[in-house]
Length: 173
Image 1 (cartoon, rainbow, N blue to C red):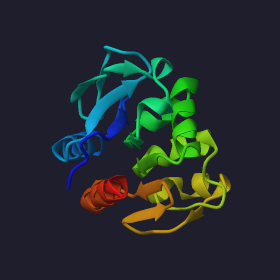
Image 2 (spheres, rainbow, N blue to C red; image 1 turned 180 degrees about the vertical axis):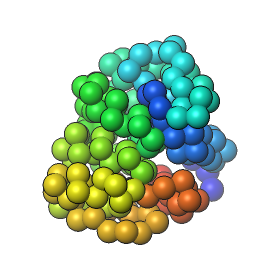
Image 3 (spheres, rainbow, N blue to C red; image 1 turned 120 degrees about the vertical axis):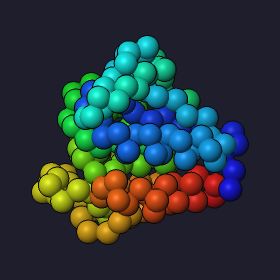
Image 4 (cartoon, rainbow, N blue to C red; image 1 turned 90 degrees about the horizontal axis):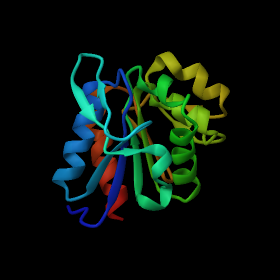
């Protein structure tokens, strides 16, 4: 498995879920991808739910979907903050519209709702936001990982292995 030459943005904001940011970042890097932490501002250290720091390398307003082959959105409470930043929402919307991999786990489905990309899509998430996702037009199901074209969704940290296997397999294709 090699993702040499593949570029991913992993989104970051305050209160991200530790495992849902670091596991994808490390697995994608291990597979050979170039991974950039993208936040509302560049060079800012964002704290996870448990106080683990992650420094953004780029501001969402300074990048575009053209700069990446995929976008990974971690959960935690961060997506509720991310969706208030139009540049972050636009990055997700544009990547989705361009057919690039857009991957969201747990509460990251909130970003998909705000980006307006869920109409008619089959997805999963943490059950707490099932209503939000269905109200945004998604067909929600309770599975460890769901792929619908370029959209990949997953439920919780327990599902990270299946989530990353799917992201890597789709990105290799």
